Amino acid sequence: GEDVEQSLFLSVREGDSSVINCTYTDSSSTYLYWYKQEPGAGLQLLTYIFSNMDMKQDQRLTVLLNKKDKHLSLRIADTQTGDSAIYFCAERPLSGGYNKLIFGAGTRLAVHP
Amino acid sequence: KAGVTQTPRYLIKTRGQQVTLSCSPISGHRSVSWYQQTPGQGLQFLFEYFSETQRNKGNFPGRFSGRQFSNSRSEMNVSTLELGDSALYLCASSLGLAGVPSYEQYFGPGTRLTVT
Image (cartoon, rainbow over all chains, first blue to last red; front, side, top):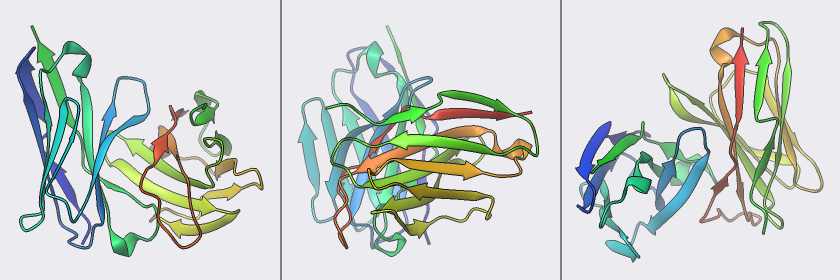
């Protein structure tokens, strides 16, 4: 089936690293995504990883994929107050066809001084 | 390059009415997908259009429909509005190639629909 799970809340201190975790169920998923949503805004594509990769790094962002456990994580280095937002993990299952994304419920990241 | 635009940004309608939302994708993008975001159900896929054809559909009632024009702009329509249709409706744009999924989808700011 198609299901994506995330913890709902994470609080970190400014300057620390944040790690947001996600598990998915569909092993056929070809791409896995991280989106960011700020209050009153749409979704911003942060990064994505192909299912045959273990890791992808993009500036302060590091994505780790454990395909065996169907576990995805997003690490944000040197977290800033501007990183406060809701982060969504999404999978694109092969069975969904084309561009259908299945989203998790989102993790609210709160960054405090 | 301009991003995905959605109009209107906010809308208030009464139960039983119908509504049409519009989405203009990024220039050159041919695929448009629609999602509904609510506090209770989260983000759910409505449908996707490519080259004026619906090629994928989520699990929503027939009151939800859409179309795509030759310039790739898309509209979605909800008829006989219910209170539960109150949501943020997001449109996503991707390059779209025939028979090939796109890696990247870019979202617009959304249309906030309130049904009273």
